[in-house]
Length: 65
Image (cartoon, rainbow, N blue to C red; front, side):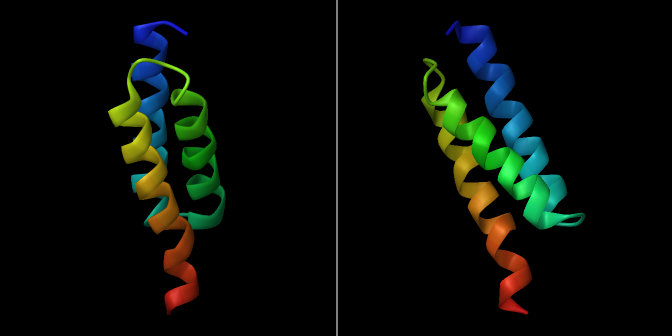
């Protein structure tokens, strides 16, 4: 996977996770997690790990309250 594709996947995963904090956290957190996991196949591993971490947080938030 190219460097540019990895950046796009990482940023899209982060954006979906952040939006997931406010709207449909289960779906957008899951989407961010999937994009982050796919992004791990690229050289942009830091963005992918951020997307995965934020997605897990967005995914768990509804269960805490």
